[in-house]
Image 1 (cartoon, rainbow, N blue to C red):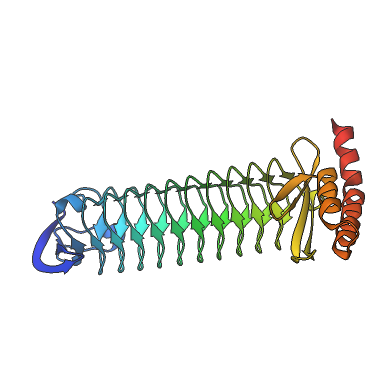
Image 2: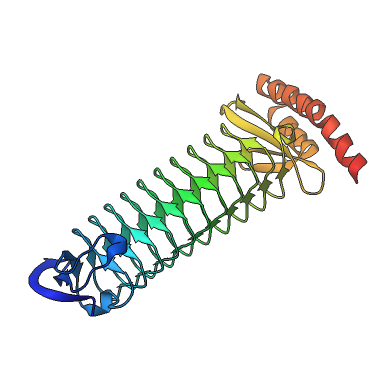
Length: 310
């Protein structure tokens, strides 16, 4: 046996917890025989073999389990049906609960939360006040921090970072060396990868791909079958029209140019028709038409290149 439950107990969330005491040295994590550890509800919560340990003020209870060489420390809580395995570390004031799994060399620290059916694996780091939940998966060397959220069935992997107040949701993927930050939103089936950056209040949704060295920022909205591989594949203009909105135009996977404005998404010609129908003759219409003319000019060379490549 590696530890015993002591007679020192406390009530936590309606559960009686026991402080543990080491029966043998665990030199890899600096534990010596006789050292007091953290708090668990029963021996089912902490494996008696391996180097797994609960220390400091950390609490593990319900059906949660810490096994293999994992360590839970600080004021961390692991509960529900959650598991912490491998060489994973859960520390600080963080919480892992529900059916969440933290494994391999993953780190969950500070005030981060991982719950639902979420998975954190590889050498992924979740810290600050970041939240990963639902069926989301964060793996490899990915980092989620700040007040960022990754949820639904979203996947973040590779060396990707999601931070500040950014959110990745739906079936979206963020991978490679991509960065999503600020108040950006990546959702639907969208992919952000390579060295691409999405930040500000930008939104990437639908089946859109933002990749290469592209940057999408400001209030830009990229949707549908967008394929933005560099800065030349996207243009946006803010504070336009009676509602001071943002027009975004970008290339698509079929080589076309698409425009978004509020709830509108369609071709340049469709957007022009909508503008003429609603704003014909007024100053907002003139403003829109001038931007449409610029969009055509801006993307003329891009379209020619796409046509030549195909």
